[in-house]
Image 1 (cartoon, one colour):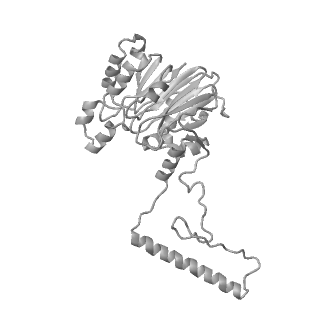
Image 2 (cartoon, rainbow, N blue to C red):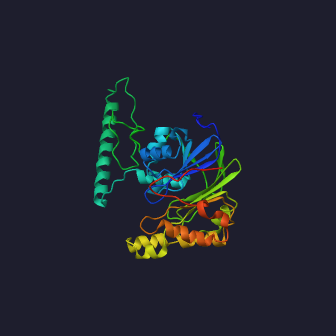
Image 3 (cartoon, rainbow, N blue to C red):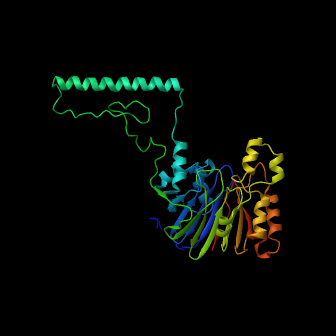
Amino acid sequence: MHKYSLYAQHMVSFTVLASGSKGNSTVVSGGRTRILVDCGLSCRELFRRMKLAGQQPETLDAIIVTHEHTDHINGLVVTARKLGIPVYFTEATHRAWMRWLTPRRQMTYAQWIEQCRKQAAERQAELDATVEDCEHEELDAETQPIAVLPEPSGDPAPESGSNWPPSRKEDPTWLPGVEYFQAGQPFEIGDIAVSPFTIPHDAADPVGFVFRAEGIRMGFTTDLGYIPPNVKAQLQSVDLLLLESNHDLEMLRDGPYPWAVKQRVLSRVGHLSNEAAAEFLEKSYDGQAAYVILAHLSESNNLPELARVTAERALNGRASLLANRLLLAAQNEPLSAIYF
C-alpha cells in the first residue's frame, strides 16, 4: 500500500510502543500495510521508539484513533502532517478532537451584548456607505460588489488583506486526510481488515478493534470501565489479545488521586482493574490467543507484578498461555515486536 517497499517479508506483526496514562501507541502490520493505533507520543518520541523496535516511521500508511483523550492523540497532528498520512476516526471522535484543539473565547453576557452592538453598528455603517456610493454613481468600474453578511461566529469580519481563511499551518485541526468509520461496521485499510466495536468509556465515541491480516486476528481494547457482552464476543478466537489491566483496587482506593478521580476510574466508563481483567480471562475468554498482553497499567495505582500475578492465576488452567506468552506493555519502552 505504501510507496516505501522496505519490507521484503510481508509478515504480520504487532508492536506496542507505549501504553499508559502518559501516551499510547501501537503498530499493527500485515501484508504491505502498517497502521499506527493511537498517537499519544510526541512525533519525535514516536519515531525514536519505532526505530528502537526495528520499525521504519516512513512505512506507516495510516493512523487510527480509539478516542480523543490526550494520552491517545497528543502527537497526532505533527505525526500525520510529517508523514502525509490519513487519520481514521469515528465522526463523533473527530468532532470532539476538533473542539478540543480549537481555541475558544469566554466573555460575560454584557461583553457579548456590547460586541453585538458594535458589529451591528459597523455593518450599518458599511451599508450606509454603499448606498451613498450607489446614489452618487461613483463606484469604480473595477470594484466588485461587497456582500455584507452577519458573522455566525460572533467575531468581526476579517479586514481586507488579512489571512482568511486560515492557512493549513494556522489551522490546528488540519490533517492530510480524514476518514470516518463506524463501530460495528468492518472496513479495510490496505491489507488489514478492521472491525471496530463500541467500548464503555467517558469519551465521545470510544472503540476497540479486531485487526485481521493473512488469517491472523488481533484483539485490541483498553480504556473501558467493564467488559460488556459485545466486547466479550469480539475478543473470541483471536491469535493475540491486548487487554487493559489498569489498576489494583486497593492501591487505587489508598492512592494519591482525588476522590472524584477515583470514582471516575472505578466507574463503568472508567478503566479496567486487574481483578476485572482476570475475571474475563478466567470466565469469558476462550483461551485461543498465543499472546495475551496486559496494557494501560497505571504508574500510580498498579504494579507490573500485581497485574501479572492476578492474570496468571486466572489463566492457571491454560499452561500454554503462561510464562513468556503473558506479556506486559510498558509506558517507558517499547515491547518487543510479536511476529506471526
